[in-house]
Length: 152
Image (cartoon, rainbow, N blue to C red; front, top):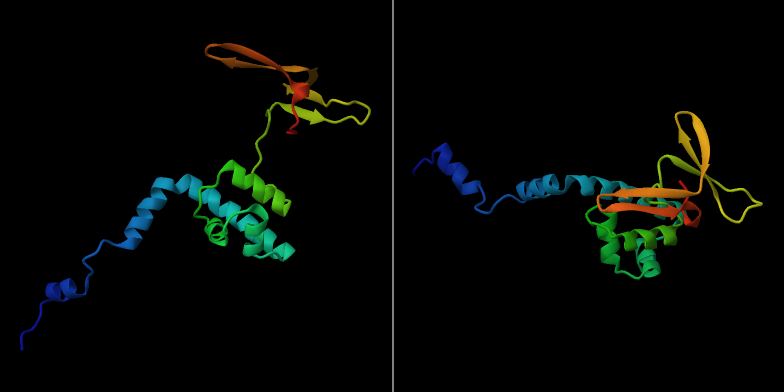
């Protein structure tokens, strides 16, 4: 009977196929930023589903996607579109992401007025502003802020 060396034994038991784990690690490293955010969104969705006692299948029906797609979402492995995020937010009555309209402005709604009042805070001083100027390399663009429907 021939004795196998340690090297020969390892060659027998080691797979000839590349490691799935190694491929998963490479995939994660290449997409780490959005995968981390996707995982946080998945947790928030799962918590809300549990809180309101809604199944993944029922959520899928509400937003018009397959249950398999919802399963990918709650595993944190799906790169979600803004459209899908909005549908989930509406179906679950939660906010998954927020995009501030302008970090230096705050909207104050006064019940007597029909349009919101914006305050800009600069160096501790507060002033009311009625328009915002955006600076672009090809020129400036001024837009009245009272047309904005978003709150910061």
